Length: 311
Image (tube, rainbow, N blue to C red; front, side, top):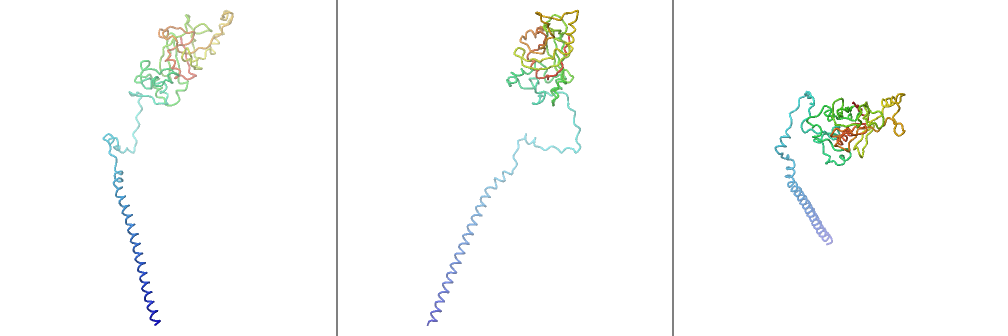
């Protein structure tokens, strides 16, 4: 009897084990099915996103349409020859509409047609005077040889006083500026009001010196606009003054004081433009120019420029 009961219990236990194994298998299958379903859903979502983004990527890879003018300019140039063609010589002529580049020598004193007007830059106009106007000096289309060289200067040679020279003719009321040996520009000038001709001999004779001098300084002047100081008296002037003090001629004197050679001679502007325009020699020995001209010379001429004053 006991044997039969043990066998029955074993049968029931085996059935329970089989039932539990089947349940576990069903649970595993359900988990696998759920995982597979979730993976399929994720793949479907990614595929949907990619399918939505593909048109945007395709549009971005398309070339941007060009306007006809852009298409013409975008046309590739034909391949150049492996042997370069000889470079054409630069023409000395200045094309219409040419303007000097900022930072070059020409930009500082170019005609008004090529540079900004004083009204556009009031600070520079107040400091250095108005730039020359088209009706005051030659235009960019008709430049002198010196102006052409100056406007084509691309280095610092325009700062070298050795490249500038000033030639003055008192009888012609003329002051001419040369750049690198070529005529740059001529200016109207008036001189000392002495009625006696000749060079300056001593202080107060109201004559303008004659000889070779250097510009030794430049400064603003409340009365004369700009003042370019000359190195008068030089060695020759001192010798000339010493020749006056001979046994035959007493040295010049005023109020019991011996008068020396004088000084403070230079090139400056004017506070009476009417006298300058009328060729009236009114200074006490200096050279007077129009204010716009002296402002221009202040910008152009470096200290050390030679000035030759002729009768």
